[in-house]
Image (tube, rainbow, N blue to C red; front, side, top):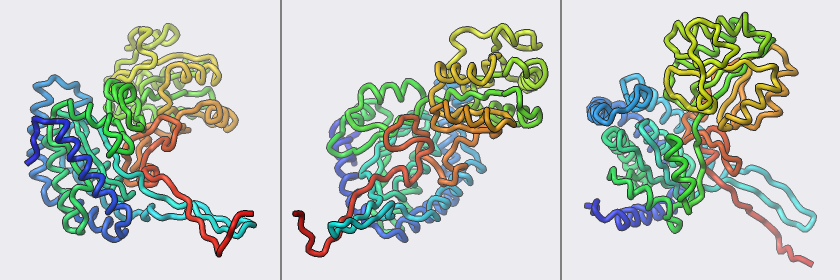
Length: 421
C-alpha cells in the first residue's frame, strides 16, 4: 500500500510507474487501446450505481464546503451524464489512432525520404477541479494518444473520480495494458499538486483544468511545461445586421443551458443600432429566465437590469449573471473583447459576411463563432469524442485538446547509402 503520509515519495513512485507504462503505450497496438476504452465504457455503465453512490458523498462534501450552485452542477452526476461519459469513451475508442500517423512526407535531391510522424508526449499530468467526468475524458484521450497520465482530481470529486478510475483500470486490465498507464493520485492533500509541478524527470506536460486560482498557481510555479486552460470570459456581440430570432436563440442557450461550464457566455455586447430592437428583446428574455443582467448606462433603461460595476467586465460569473454593454460598432466590440476577454471563445451574431470576417480576422481567441451558441466550445461537439481542456495559449495545442493534440512528432529519414558532400 502506498504511504499517503509521505507525499514526495508517493508522487515519485507514481511518476516512475507512469514513465514505465508510457514506454509500453508508445508502441501499443491500436486494437489494444480500443479494447481498453470500450471495456472501460462497459464498466462505467455496469457500475453506474457505485459511481452515483460515490457522487452522493461528494455532493454532501460540496454542500458542507459551501460550493456555489454552478460548482455543484459541475460536480453532480446522474444517469444521463454517466451515459454521456460512456458515449465519450466509445467515441474516442472509435477514432483513428494518431500514433504513427504520417503528417507529411517528401523526397530530397540528396536521396533522402523524410517523414514527419505523430508520437506520444510521454507522461501527462492533469490537475482538475470539481468535474468528475474529466477523469474519464482525460484518461481516455491520453490512452488513445499513447500517453500515460497522472490524474489529480479536486477534493470535491474525490469519491466520484475514484469510482470512475476503477472502471478505467478494469478496461486496461482486460486489454492487457499496464494499469499504471492511468493513475489517480489517491489523496486530497494539496502537497501532491506542488510535487507534480516539479516532477520534470517523469512528467512531460501539465494540463490544469479549473478556476483562475488553480491555473494561475500552476502557471506561476510549474517547472514542467503547461497547456493552460484559462477561464472562459466568453463574449457575444450582437451586430446591427443580426437576425433577431437567431440572436435570441443563441444568447439564451449560450448563457442559460449550463452556467457552470467554460463555454457559457458571460458578457453581451450590443451594437447601438440594435439596442432598442433586438437588444432589448434579448435582455428582457434573459431577465425573464432569471438571469441577473448587469448593464452599462446605455442599457439600464431595460426593465429588470441592474447597474454594472467596473469589475463585471472581464469576469467569469459561472452563474445566472451576465454583463451587458452597448458598443458603437464591431470595432468597439473587438476592442472591448481584446481588453477584457481571456482568448477562450467569442461569438458574433450577424448576417453580414464582411463584418463576420473582420471579427474572425481581428480577434485571436482560440475559438471564434458566428451565429452559434458558445456552449459548443467543447471537444465532444468538435468531433473529438471529448477534450482534456480548452487550451488558450499559443504554443503546441490550442482550443479543444483531443487525442491528436496530445501528440508531438518526430522525423523518420530513409536513405540508400546517402552521404553528405
